[in-house]
Length: 425
Image (cartoon, rainbow, N blue to C red; front, side):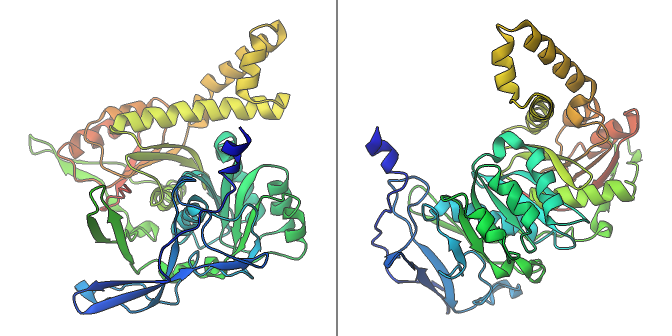
């Protein structure tokens, strides 16, 4: 058993070369392998996605692209790939691929949330919770944590402004794998170092994320047969409330239908949720309210299934929050105790009853979907939970049917189109 445990902390020596060059036509991109000298030893990545997979991190060193007349990111824009020994304030067990890709996806999401302090907690390259706040980074992190306290366990925390003492105390009181911020206020690192295995990363680029929002990078996908697909990376077109499109369509009978336009608060939450959607594995939907995610349904094969999954998660997390705040135990611990303890069974019934009454906290929430709704079923399921506004790409053959479902809901649901799909495979 001890040998099995050891594999998770053992650094896999890799044989990858110091440089990697990609040639596209007449243009070359030269990448430099990243290593760090820690404890008088040169180390690369601990390992890849799993402990038996050697891996290497490369940073773009030279070259640029002009293909397609697009604005491509060149050298000097590194965030995670630019990490230095000095910025690795505490290496913990030393980062592996999944730690860095979680932080990278946090930066990917936060590049569209630069107007105020924002925080994302990620696991398995998907956000568990995300939030922004007009107050401070600690308020944003607190909201993100309570979006999904269960999934946040062992996650990566990424923020877009200097980490405060209050935020550090919250991290120290819980278990996380990584904390990444553009800077750390005086005394915060000492608090965080109380968690010896925590990786603490100071990434200055997280303070300049707004500079990246209109540029793309060369996105490379490798196939199981060794083939490669290259694509322009996703660039979010919804950077302002006015970027949404009115939800209008024509029925088979030639009748024009239009959805109610969202109000200011609904638009703000839809824009926030659409920014978070850029970092969620498709098929996915997000319920959000007041600048925080409520539930994220991800990786499903059907659209209505995404909505149902997110609703199930919302109810579970809502009940767990009640149990944890009121009784100091998780929902699952409460269920276990309720089997033999009549008092605990009564408390469980009460919590589950309040959860049902509150629709898992989804009443008045907003919903975004990374792809269009092919049928009205997803709308009807969301409407039953009291959702007030929806954003999705539009473009379905049944857009009119979907809009009619919004108009028939009581109260009427607002809807807008993004004019853009946000799949992430």
